[in-house]
Image (cartoon, rainbow over all chains, first blue to last red; front, side, top):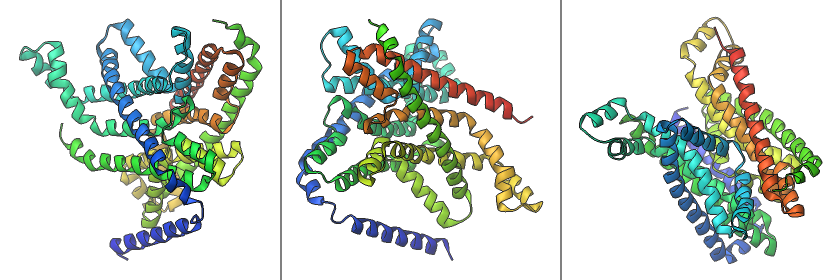
Length: 244
Length: 210
């Protein structure tokens, strides 16, 4: 059997399986999902917005942390290392609760849900992206630094004009992978009361009770978003791996 | 700051730690076994096995743990503990399968060809030649996979497993001392991560080939 025939058989059997799966849940109460459409779409919007905001803030923080970890004098460097390693070693839920509990201890009033979510997600993203940025900076050949200095650029100019642009290109696939990770992590912030996609599904389920339809919709929603992004990574990765 | 609260609730935290450790050990062992089996199946020359493993990895990696957890608990209707363990195993085994496959690819081709020429069967080649080398190669990234499992056990609180994060919430709601409780529990998670990193480092040194 040729490779093409095998692929055809595989695709056909997957299609049959999918059809059987869809057929078996045909009475799960899909009208509930349909009727709550606008509400669920708003939830998806909130999830995407949270991801974009936390990755943007996290990237800025990650660049600072990575530079501190690589070039700062010992005291500061160890602080950055400590932050990165601790945030990466404790559960994301703990970080969210930590922000939730620490805020009142500092300001005296309870923290609004969106702030708790954005702060904790950005803190998590910064720790992970710091390592991505660090790997990106280290991937730029040493000769680039040296030629920058020889041409008379200052350390800051060298960093912003020569190193970071190249590091950014090299780390793009890893950056998208972490975007996927953050997209999945946002499902946890429902504990602070934000109506993201995850909580929207739960709210609708509490009202109309159609768990199979709703949770399948949720799984499909996250899968489509994450799969599209990981497909993008696979598309661009070889192109980026070849050029330095 | 009222740190005496922690001492008063030591039993609660201890119970939480037991649950977290149970979940972690079961899920780490489970995801390692499933991950290694999947990784090996995916490396075999069979087209359909390879496609099956690729689909398994792709689907499970692109779903958040909580989605799996809620699906198993509310739709499939499992008890909380089995649902948590299965969710954690299916989640992490997808990552570990990918890792093991990468490890197997990193072992030079000549190794399995030589073993085949010596008359070893497929199973013997994997058992005695490929896996021992591949697992040594992937030991460092495997450490972070195991730590990831411990971190993800915290999501089990959302379906009511009374593990550490759940107890943090419980202490907060009874005493409003969330900060102290969260700090203590954070330290406990850190200790677990360090224990895993230390244990894996020790294992790596013991198993190093000379």
